[in-house]
Amino acid sequence: MRIAVGLSGGVDSSVAAYILKKQGHDVIALFMQNWHDTTGTLHGDCPWKDDLDIARLVARKLDIPFHSVDLSEAYKKRVVDYMFSEYEKGRTPNPDVLCNREIKFDVFLKEAVNAGADFVATGHYCRKSEKIIDGKTIYSLLAGADKNKDQSYFLCQLSQQKLAKALFPIGDITKPEVRRIAAEQNLPTAERRDSQGICFVGKVDLPVFLQQQLAAKQGNIVEILPDYYEKSNQNISNKTVEQLAQPYVYRPNSGKKIGTHSGAHFFTIGQRKGINIGGRIEPLFVVGIDVVTNTLYTGEGFNHPGLFRKALFIRENEIHYVRNDLPMRTGEECDYLVRIRYRQPLQKAKLIRKNEGLYILFAEPQRGITSGQFAAWYDGDELVGSGVISG
Image (cartoon, rainbow, N blue to C red; front, side, top):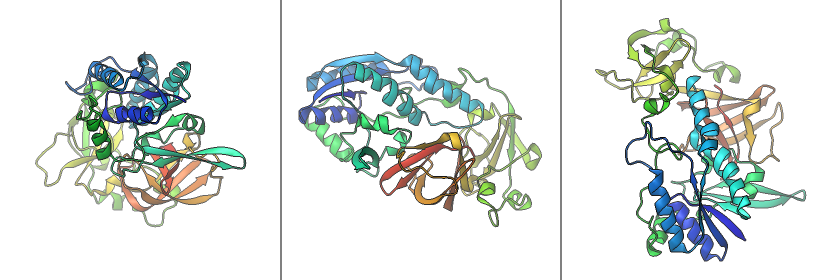
Protein backbone atom coordinates (compact mmCIF):
# COMPACT_ATOMS: atom_id res chain seq x y z
CA MET A 1 0.00 0.00 0.00
CA ARG A 2 1.48 3.36 -1.01
CA ILE A 3 0.89 6.17 1.47
CA ALA A 4 1.74 9.86 1.05
CA VAL A 5 2.57 11.54 4.35
CA GLY A 6 2.09 15.28 4.65
CA LEU A 7 5.52 15.93 6.13
CA SER A 8 5.42 19.39 7.68
CA GLY A 9 8.76 19.64 9.46
CA GLY A 10 7.10 18.98 12.82
CA VAL A 11 7.48 16.04 15.17
CA ASP A 12 3.94 14.70 14.73
CA SER A 13 4.08 14.13 10.97
CA SER A 14 7.64 12.82 11.31
CA VAL A 15 6.57 10.10 13.74
CA ALA A 16 3.52 9.35 11.58
CA ALA A 17 5.87 8.67 8.66
CA TYR A 18 8.13 6.53 10.85
CA ILE A 19 5.22 4.40 12.09
CA LEU A 20 3.97 3.76 8.56
CA LYS A 21 7.45 2.88 7.33
CA LYS A 22 7.92 0.49 10.28
CA GLN A 23 4.60 -1.16 9.40
CA GLY A 24 6.03 -2.00 5.98
CA HIS A 25 4.12 0.45 3.81
CA ASP A 26 5.51 2.14 0.71
CA VAL A 27 5.79 5.66 2.16
CA ILE A 28 6.48 8.88 0.28
CA ALA A 29 6.82 12.33 1.86
CA LEU A 30 5.04 15.36 0.43
CA PHE A 31 5.79 18.83 1.78
CA MET A 32 3.15 21.51 1.23
CA GLN A 33 4.32 25.04 0.61
CA ASN A 34 1.19 27.10 1.08
CA TRP A 35 2.31 30.61 1.96
CA HIS A 36 5.10 32.97 0.91
CA ASP A 37 4.16 36.40 2.24
CA THR A 38 5.62 37.27 5.67
CA THR A 39 3.51 40.43 6.18
CA GLY A 40 2.32 40.46 9.78
CA THR A 41 4.20 37.26 10.62
CA LEU A 42 6.05 37.49 13.92
CA HIS A 43 9.76 36.91 13.32
CA GLY A 44 10.98 33.38 13.81
CA ASP A 45 7.58 31.70 13.91
CA CYS A 46 6.97 28.87 11.44
CA PRO A 47 9.32 29.96 8.63
CA TRP A 48 8.47 27.65 5.73
CA LYS A 49 12.05 27.42 4.45
CA ASP A 50 13.22 25.99 7.77
CA ASP A 51 10.26 23.59 7.73
CA LEU A 52 11.20 22.46 4.22
CA ASP A 53 14.83 21.82 5.16
CA ILE A 54 13.91 19.85 8.28
CA ALA A 55 11.25 17.84 6.43
CA ARG A 56 13.92 16.87 3.90
CA LEU A 57 16.22 15.76 6.72
CA VAL A 58 13.44 13.62 8.23
CA ALA A 59 12.73 11.96 4.86
CA ARG A 60 16.44 11.27 4.42
CA LYS A 61 16.67 9.81 7.93
CA LEU A 62 13.68 7.53 7.23
CA ASP A 63 14.94 6.74 3.72
CA ILE A 64 11.70 7.67 2.00
CA PRO A 65 11.22 9.65 -1.24
CA PHE A 66 10.66 13.38 -0.72
CA HIS A 67 8.64 15.76 -2.87
CA SER A 68 7.57 19.39 -2.40
CA VAL A 69 4.37 20.84 -3.84
CA ASP A 70 3.49 24.53 -4.03
CA LEU A 71 -0.19 24.95 -3.18
CA SER A 72 0.04 28.65 -2.32
CA GLU A 73 -2.34 29.79 -5.08
CA ALA A 74 -5.10 27.46 -3.92
CA TYR A 75 -4.39 28.30 -0.26
CA LYS A 76 -4.72 32.03 -0.92
CA LYS A 77 -8.00 31.64 -2.80
CA ARG A 78 -9.64 29.07 -0.56
CA VAL A 79 -8.36 29.96 2.90
CA VAL A 80 -6.76 33.42 3.13
CA ASP A 81 -9.19 35.27 0.86
CA TYR A 82 -12.07 33.64 2.73
CA MET A 83 -10.51 34.83 6.00
CA PHE A 84 -10.34 38.40 4.78
CA SER A 85 -13.94 38.26 3.54
CA GLU A 86 -15.24 36.90 6.84
CA TYR A 87 -13.37 39.42 9.00
CA GLU A 88 -14.65 42.23 6.77
CA LYS A 89 -18.19 41.06 7.60
CA GLY A 90 -17.44 41.08 11.34
CA ARG A 91 -17.24 37.29 11.53
CA THR A 92 -14.36 35.17 12.82
CA PRO A 93 -13.33 32.24 10.59
CA ASN A 94 -11.28 29.23 11.62
CA PRO A 95 -8.43 28.90 9.08
CA ASP A 96 -7.27 25.54 10.46
CA VAL A 97 -10.63 23.89 9.76
CA LEU A 98 -10.69 25.49 6.31
CA CYS A 99 -7.12 24.40 5.58
CA ASN A 100 -7.97 20.78 6.32
CA ARG A 101 -11.15 20.86 4.25
CA GLU A 102 -9.87 22.87 1.30
CA ILE A 103 -6.15 22.08 1.13
CA LYS A 104 -4.87 19.03 3.02
CA PHE A 105 -7.81 16.78 2.19
CA ASP A 106 -8.66 18.23 -1.20
CA VAL A 107 -5.91 19.87 -3.25
CA PHE A 108 -3.11 18.02 -1.45
CA LEU A 109 -5.05 14.76 -1.55
CA LYS A 110 -5.32 15.07 -5.33
CA GLU A 111 -1.57 15.70 -5.56
CA ALA A 112 -0.95 12.57 -3.52
CA VAL A 113 -3.23 10.45 -5.70
CA ASN A 114 -1.46 11.80 -8.78
CA ALA A 115 1.80 10.65 -7.20
CA GLY A 116 0.38 7.14 -7.01
CA ALA A 117 -0.67 7.13 -3.36
CA ASP A 118 -3.56 5.03 -2.12
CA PHE A 119 -3.94 7.04 1.10
CA VAL A 120 -2.87 10.34 2.67
CA ALA A 121 -1.54 10.34 6.22
CA THR A 122 -1.18 13.32 8.55
CA GLY A 123 0.09 13.91 12.07
CA HIS A 124 -3.33 14.73 13.51
CA TYR A 125 -4.25 13.44 16.96
CA CYS A 126 -7.48 11.73 15.96
CA ARG A 127 -8.61 8.27 14.88
CA LYS A 128 -10.64 6.67 12.13
CA SER A 129 -12.75 3.54 12.19
CA GLU A 130 -14.99 1.85 9.65
CA LYS A 131 -17.96 -0.46 9.66
CA ILE A 132 -20.45 -1.89 7.18
CA ILE A 133 -24.01 -0.56 7.41
CA ASP A 134 -26.59 -1.86 4.93
CA GLY A 135 -23.78 -3.16 2.74
CA LYS A 136 -21.97 0.20 2.62
CA THR A 137 -18.68 1.10 4.28
CA ILE A 138 -19.15 3.95 6.76
CA TYR A 139 -16.15 5.81 8.18
CA SER A 140 -16.14 7.39 11.64
CA LEU A 141 -13.93 10.26 12.80
CA LEU A 142 -12.97 9.68 16.42
CA ALA A 143 -11.24 11.79 19.05
CA GLY A 144 -7.54 11.11 19.58
CA ALA A 145 -6.41 8.87 22.43
CA ASP A 146 -4.54 11.84 23.91
CA LYS A 147 -7.42 13.95 25.23
CA ASN A 148 -5.08 16.89 25.81
CA LYS A 149 -4.16 16.95 22.11
CA ASP A 150 -7.34 15.70 20.43
CA GLN A 151 -7.56 17.46 17.03
CA SER A 152 -10.74 15.91 15.66
CA TYR A 153 -12.39 19.36 15.83
CA PHE A 154 -10.02 20.65 13.13
CA LEU A 155 -11.27 17.88 10.82
CA CYS A 156 -14.96 18.50 11.47
CA GLN A 157 -15.66 19.38 7.82
CA LEU A 158 -14.29 16.17 6.28
CA SER A 159 -16.61 14.06 4.15
CA GLN A 160 -16.93 10.29 3.88
CA GLN A 161 -15.05 10.41 0.57
CA LYS A 162 -12.11 12.25 2.14
CA LEU A 163 -12.09 10.13 5.30
CA ALA A 164 -11.90 7.03 3.10
CA LYS A 165 -8.48 8.18 1.89
CA ALA A 166 -7.19 9.48 5.25
CA LEU A 167 -4.91 7.83 7.80
CA PHE A 168 -3.95 9.12 11.26
CA PRO A 169 -1.01 6.99 12.45
CA ILE A 170 -0.48 8.77 15.79
CA GLY A 171 -4.13 8.95 16.80
CA ASP A 172 -3.78 6.04 19.22
CA ILE A 173 -0.75 7.40 21.10
CA THR A 174 -0.02 10.41 23.28
CA LYS A 175 2.16 13.42 22.62
CA PRO A 176 4.82 12.34 25.17
CA GLU A 177 4.99 8.99 23.40
CA VAL A 178 5.41 10.74 20.04
CA ARG A 179 8.31 12.76 21.49
CA ARG A 180 9.84 9.57 22.92
CA ILE A 181 9.66 7.75 19.59
CA ALA A 182 11.18 10.72 17.77
CA ALA A 183 14.07 10.86 20.25
CA GLU A 184 14.69 7.10 20.07
CA GLN A 185 14.87 7.27 16.28
CA ASN A 186 17.05 10.41 16.35
CA LEU A 187 14.60 12.29 14.14
CA PRO A 188 15.60 15.92 13.50
CA THR A 189 12.21 17.06 14.82
CA ALA A 190 12.42 15.29 18.18
CA GLU A 191 12.85 18.47 20.22
CA ARG A 192 11.36 20.96 17.78
CA ARG A 193 8.58 23.02 19.30
CA ASP A 194 5.04 22.79 17.94
CA SER A 195 3.97 25.41 15.42
CA GLN A 196 1.49 28.08 16.50
CA GLY A 197 -0.84 30.54 14.84
CA ILE A 198 -2.60 30.37 11.48
CA CYS A 199 -2.17 27.10 9.59
CA PHE A 200 0.84 27.40 7.24
CA VAL A 201 1.16 31.14 7.90
CA GLY A 202 2.40 30.98 11.48
CA LYS A 203 1.96 33.22 14.46
CA VAL A 204 0.86 36.64 13.27
CA ASP A 205 -0.04 40.10 14.48
CA LEU A 206 -3.60 39.67 13.24
CA PRO A 207 -4.47 43.37 12.63
CA VAL A 208 -1.24 43.84 10.67
CA PHE A 209 -1.92 40.66 8.70
CA LEU A 210 -5.50 41.68 7.94
CA GLN A 211 -4.43 45.17 6.86
CA GLN A 212 -3.06 43.59 3.69
CA GLN A 213 -6.64 43.88 2.43
CA LEU A 214 -8.71 45.52 5.18
CA ALA A 215 -8.06 49.18 5.84
CA ALA A 216 -7.73 50.53 9.37
CA LYS A 217 -10.63 52.82 10.23
CA GLN A 218 -11.13 54.64 13.51
CA GLY A 219 -14.37 53.99 15.34
CA ASN A 220 -15.90 54.24 18.78
CA ILE A 221 -15.59 51.81 21.69
CA VAL A 222 -18.82 51.65 23.66
CA GLU A 223 -19.13 50.03 27.07
CA ILE A 224 -22.26 47.98 27.77
CA LEU A 225 -23.18 47.73 31.44
CA PRO A 226 -24.59 44.49 32.88
CA ASP A 227 -27.98 46.03 33.61
CA TYR A 228 -28.48 46.66 29.88
CA TYR A 229 -29.59 43.05 29.43
CA GLU A 230 -32.33 43.34 32.03
CA LYS A 231 -33.50 46.70 30.69
CA SER A 232 -33.59 45.31 27.16
CA ASN A 233 -35.45 42.22 28.31
CA GLN A 234 -32.66 40.05 26.91
CA ASN A 235 -32.51 37.61 29.79
CA ILE A 236 -32.91 33.96 28.83
CA SER A 237 -36.12 33.12 30.70
CA ASN A 238 -39.25 32.33 28.71
CA LYS A 239 -37.56 32.59 25.32
CA THR A 240 -37.82 30.31 22.30
CA VAL A 241 -34.71 28.65 20.91
CA GLU A 242 -34.89 31.01 17.93
CA GLN A 243 -34.75 34.00 20.27
CA LEU A 244 -31.98 32.49 22.39
CA ALA A 245 -29.87 31.90 19.29
CA GLN A 246 -30.02 35.55 18.24
CA PRO A 247 -26.86 37.58 18.96
CA TYR A 248 -27.35 40.50 21.32
CA VAL A 249 -28.35 43.69 19.53
CA TYR A 250 -26.47 46.88 20.40
CA ARG A 251 -26.64 50.44 19.15
CA PRO A 252 -24.25 53.34 19.81
CA ASN A 253 -26.67 54.70 22.43
CA SER A 254 -26.83 51.32 24.22
CA GLY A 255 -23.89 52.37 26.36
CA LYS A 256 -21.23 54.98 26.93
CA LYS A 257 -18.36 55.83 24.59
CA ILE A 258 -15.08 55.11 26.40
CA GLY A 259 -12.48 55.26 23.63
CA THR A 260 -11.64 54.56 20.00
CA HIS A 261 -10.28 51.63 17.97
CA SER A 262 -8.70 51.18 14.54
CA GLY A 263 -11.31 48.91 12.96
CA ALA A 264 -14.14 46.78 14.34
CA HIS A 265 -13.36 44.06 11.79
CA PHE A 266 -10.01 43.42 13.52
CA PHE A 267 -11.77 42.11 16.65
CA THR A 268 -13.75 39.06 17.70
CA ILE A 269 -16.27 38.26 20.43
CA GLY A 270 -14.56 37.56 23.76
CA GLN A 271 -11.32 39.28 22.74
CA ARG A 272 -9.41 41.14 25.42
CA LYS A 273 -6.16 42.10 23.72
CA GLY A 274 -6.06 45.30 21.68
CA ILE A 275 -8.84 47.26 23.38
CA ASN A 276 -6.16 49.28 25.17
CA ILE A 277 -8.29 50.91 27.86
CA GLY A 278 -6.94 50.58 31.37
CA GLY A 279 -7.86 51.78 34.84
CA ARG A 280 -10.41 49.01 35.41
CA ILE A 281 -10.89 46.58 38.26
CA GLU A 282 -11.38 43.85 35.67
CA PRO A 283 -10.36 43.83 31.99
CA LEU A 284 -12.67 44.78 29.15
CA PHE A 285 -13.82 42.15 26.65
CA VAL A 286 -15.49 42.50 23.26
CA VAL A 287 -19.18 41.62 23.51
CA GLY A 288 -20.35 42.92 20.13
CA ILE A 289 -19.08 44.06 16.73
CA ASP A 290 -20.89 46.29 14.24
CA VAL A 291 -18.90 46.70 11.02
CA VAL A 292 -21.59 48.90 9.45
CA THR A 293 -21.22 51.65 12.07
CA ASN A 294 -17.65 50.50 12.88
CA THR A 295 -18.52 50.29 16.56
CA LEU A 296 -16.89 47.99 19.09
CA TYR A 297 -19.05 47.04 22.07
CA THR A 298 -17.29 45.97 25.26
CA GLY A 299 -18.10 44.78 28.76
CA GLU A 300 -16.04 44.68 31.93
CA GLY A 301 -15.16 41.34 33.49
CA PHE A 302 -14.68 37.74 32.39
CA ASN A 303 -18.23 36.92 33.47
CA HIS A 304 -19.94 39.88 31.81
CA PRO A 305 -23.46 38.73 30.73
CA GLY A 306 -22.87 39.88 27.14
CA LEU A 307 -20.27 37.13 26.75
CA PHE A 308 -22.74 34.31 27.44
CA ARG A 309 -25.52 32.84 25.35
CA LYS A 310 -27.64 29.74 25.64
CA ALA A 311 -28.03 28.81 21.97
CA LEU A 312 -26.65 29.24 18.46
CA PHE A 313 -27.90 28.82 14.90
CA ILE A 314 -26.43 27.14 11.82
CA ARG A 315 -28.02 27.90 8.45
CA GLU A 316 -29.40 24.99 6.44
CA ASN A 317 -26.72 25.26 3.74
CA GLU A 318 -23.91 25.34 6.36
CA ILE A 319 -24.81 22.03 8.05
CA HIS A 320 -22.24 19.31 7.38
CA TYR A 321 -22.49 15.65 8.35
CA VAL A 322 -19.30 13.63 8.67
CA ARG A 323 -21.68 10.73 9.20
CA ASN A 324 -23.91 11.45 6.23
CA ASP A 325 -25.96 8.37 7.11
CA LEU A 326 -27.13 10.18 10.25
CA PRO A 327 -28.76 13.39 8.97
CA MET A 328 -31.28 15.15 11.18
CA ARG A 329 -34.72 15.61 9.65
CA THR A 330 -36.89 18.68 10.04
CA GLY A 331 -38.62 18.54 13.41
CA GLU A 332 -36.12 16.09 14.86
CA GLU A 333 -34.32 16.75 18.17
CA CYS A 334 -31.19 14.91 19.33
CA ASP A 335 -28.93 15.12 22.37
CA TYR A 336 -25.22 15.45 21.57
CA LEU A 337 -22.01 16.73 23.06
CA VAL A 338 -20.86 19.95 21.38
CA ARG A 339 -17.77 22.15 21.24
CA ILE A 340 -17.54 25.57 19.63
CA ARG A 341 -13.75 25.92 19.68
CA TYR A 342 -10.65 23.76 19.82
CA ARG A 343 -9.77 22.42 23.28
CA GLN A 344 -13.13 23.44 24.74
CA PRO A 345 -14.50 20.63 26.93
CA LEU A 346 -17.50 18.99 25.30
CA GLN A 347 -20.80 20.57 26.36
CA LYS A 348 -24.20 18.90 26.75
CA ALA A 349 -26.67 20.25 24.22
CA LYS A 350 -29.85 19.52 22.32
CA LEU A 351 -29.79 19.86 18.52
CA ILE A 352 -33.08 20.98 17.02
CA ARG A 353 -33.58 20.70 13.25
CA LYS A 354 -35.95 23.19 11.65
CA ASN A 355 -36.66 24.21 8.05
CA GLU A 356 -34.27 27.15 8.14
CA GLY A 357 -31.41 25.24 9.71
CA LEU A 358 -30.09 23.77 12.94
CA TYR A 359 -30.39 25.23 16.43
CA ILE A 360 -28.09 24.10 19.23
CA LEU A 361 -29.50 24.65 22.72
CA PHE A 362 -26.91 24.19 25.45
CA ALA A 363 -27.57 22.86 28.93
CA GLU A 364 -25.49 25.76 30.26
CA PRO A 365 -24.86 29.22 28.73
CA GLN A 366 -21.71 29.29 26.61
CA ARG A 367 -19.04 31.98 26.68
CA GLY A 368 -17.94 33.61 23.44
CA ILE A 369 -20.27 32.12 20.82
CA THR A 370 -18.83 33.68 17.66
CA SER A 371 -20.28 33.85 14.17
CA GLY A 372 -18.00 32.34 11.54
CA GLN A 373 -16.56 29.74 13.90
CA PHE A 374 -17.50 26.06 13.71
CA ALA A 375 -19.70 24.11 16.11
CA ALA A 376 -19.02 20.36 16.09
CA TRP A 377 -21.21 17.72 17.69
CA TYR A 378 -20.12 14.36 19.06
CA ASP A 379 -21.69 11.08 20.05
CA GLY A 380 -19.21 10.01 22.69
CA ASP A 381 -15.81 10.00 20.97
CA GLU A 382 -17.24 10.21 17.47
CA LEU A 383 -17.54 13.52 15.65
CA VAL A 384 -20.88 13.26 13.83
CA GLY A 385 -21.25 16.67 12.18
CA SER A 386 -20.47 20.35 12.23
CA GLY A 387 -21.52 23.71 10.88
CA VAL A 388 -20.62 27.37 10.64
CA ILE A 389 -22.13 29.42 13.45
CA SER A 390 -24.44 32.05 11.99
CA GLY A 391 -25.53 33.65 15.19
